[in-house]
Length: 294
View 1 (cartoon, one colour):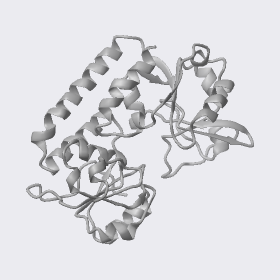
View 2 (cartoon, helix red, strand yellow):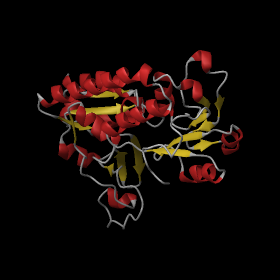
View 3 (cartoon, rainbow, N blue to C red):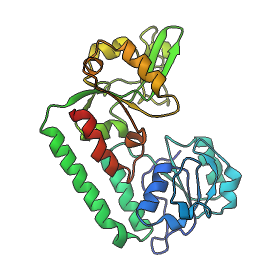
View 4 (cartoon, rainbow, N blue to C red):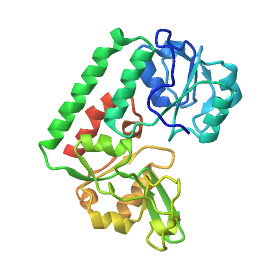
């Protein structure tokens, strides 16, 4: 997948009038920025205003879209994301002769740059430029406020698992959007420098690590002992299919000696606050610091 946060070469004097978005956060941003009318296809996970839901075609989940439906819609642009969409689907769309924009922001600043590209591409500067400038100021003030206090040691698992060797959680390191966002809000990711090791036994410290090759090393799987040793002051549990009350009970029991559990600072949060880049960032800047300041 050819990753570039910039859209493919298009005639900027004539914005693409038929767009398919395979990225829920980009769908949300297009509507928030006044360009939602260009959308003709979205995923089952995308949220749109009720008055537009009937005219836009749903094409499946981000990781299992109906490629035939995408092609039949004859979009002038298909928006995808490296993490949320599969390479084979992107290749199939490109081989059908469709233009694809692969987004992959790894920092808050890159996410804001994508918003600026959206308003220029769809000629909605007059409607949305002030909104993005306000968002930039909000981010600046959030960073400034967070730096006036000691950083909060933070653990944020995004998935839980169990093997024959014991419990583990997947988290993320400094090469991710979630890490940068939490850092802007005053969080000190305790696994910022931890890389993912292969196989799972190596990640759990029970075997030698293989050469990862081209495999992603940004999402390590960590053990309860690792988390306890790093003494997080706050634990954030993003809501997702695999995360909820069961994980909360398991985690608080296994990590009962950490400052976060002892002080009642384990918070279940909307997972979109740390995973959806785009205009959702405004809500993230408003809510995430409140969990860290308590």
